[in-house]
Image (tube, rainbow, N blue to C red; front, side, top):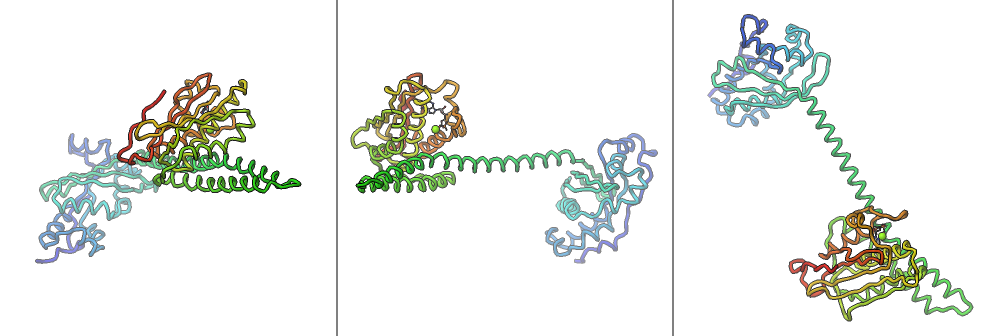
Length: 431
Ligand SMILES: Nc1ncnc2c1ncn2[C@@H]1O[C@H](COP(=O)(O)OP(=O)(O)O)[C@@H](O)[C@H]1O
Ligand SMILES: [Mg+2]
């Protein structure tokens, strides 16, 4: 088996022809004035070369070209441009065919990728091929194109391979614009994610931070007496210390939550968590003469994360306080209550009821969305955070009743006996 002749040893067969429309009748005119750039190239020499390569036993063209990197350049000696139509001249910004042909080698330098695509298709015996490449016009303008070519059966027809070019500048520009938009959107989404995280943390630590301040002030007062009340002060310090731990736990859990970490639920005594939440909001309730009321089924427990359950309760309780204050009604009747009952065999039901102004019909669907607030200094994060936390536990949260007399929010969490997540019951809604 002989190695195929090197490209430079095969003679060029193509010739530059006159105007294609000259004396060629309708077909020539169609080619000449077709609105699509068409380039006729002679690939017959290259066809003979690929046939010889196959006969020589090469089965993997790509490997062969990798081992012989100069071949693609050398094959140019076996190739020539035969003809170009008017649209091709316009594409390259050439005033005449003579000008185009004078510059054709520079205008259409060997393109490793495009040439390989044609070679591979010929090698595989395919009937067509296509690819993309970037062209440079005579004025240096860059034009991205998609080219297509039908591969003939007979070797002779390879003398006039028709390459069709489609200018895809507009599509590329649209794609670029789309790409820019996409990355802008991704940036905005990241920024809004960061914004939500910051807003969530700021919102959630606001309450314990305020409570710590009040407690420390109280502790100072206990100590700053002629006869200091050490025991009272120590209790206050203990609360402050516990709430400080809660604050760092809130930040940690929010981070875990946003990164998709699973909830770390344990069995909790509901009375314990509710009393702790009530204590945190007590000073704000007292300052506004709001009575606090709890109704907890004896011994009732829940399977949840203590800090997260406390967060949900505080968010609902604080909203209740705000609604009561904003209603401007007689404070003697202002009450904020928490009730806990066994909802069904798998869920524990929490109800937070206030005597505030109620929620307007138009607001009911949107208040669980981030940043939805009707308060001038609101953040609109309390309810969306609460919803996410409850749902991450497999529970549900909803507005049970609302009106001029006040609002009752309900949420469910799994009780300890139920086997999460497979045995999670669907909570019943109580309206
Ligand atoms: N108990 C309630 N009574 C009346 N309106 C409420 C109550 N809870 C929530 N809302 C409404 O839902 C909105 C969103 O609440 P939330 O997400 O906690 O954000 P924020 O309290 O910062 O406004 C509030 O601005 C308010 O309009
Ligand atoms: Mg709120």
